[in-house]
Image 1: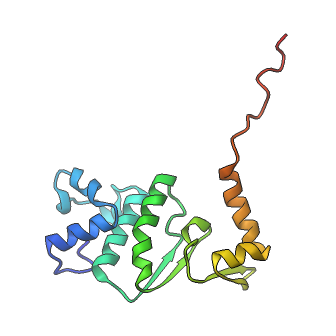
Image 2: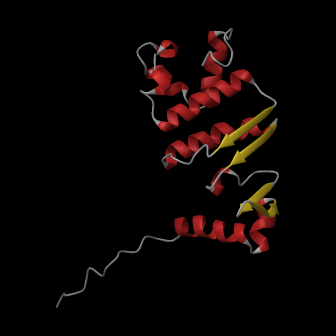
Image 3: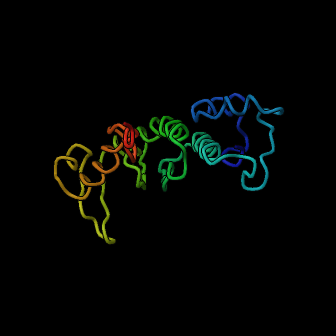
Length: 161
């Protein structure tokens, strides 16, 4: 955490960790904020690493932030915690979010859809969903499956007399 702000107070560290949704995890560690997590965060899950990175961002307070696939390799619970932590960060500064998971960018001021290395579409979520293009297809693929009830691969009643 101190890489971002070596002179941070304990209270600043705690506040950044709370905002990044990682403080509960830190509190459970035997040595709290002094916990050694190993080289490259060896002892941390992907979601924990991401949330510690967000706490560092909060401590550094940069004018520009770039998130590259911030939630790509996370389970849905970790993804939501990351999104909850990122949302207030991007409200007050210039932010670039690179994502395949559209849930990460739904609230963006402007979305650029890249296809074959070119900008294929540009607009807000509402504009792009209504346009019927690439973004609409991605949106329907990602969100319609979540809304559909799971169907079994076979009929359990087959073979019954």
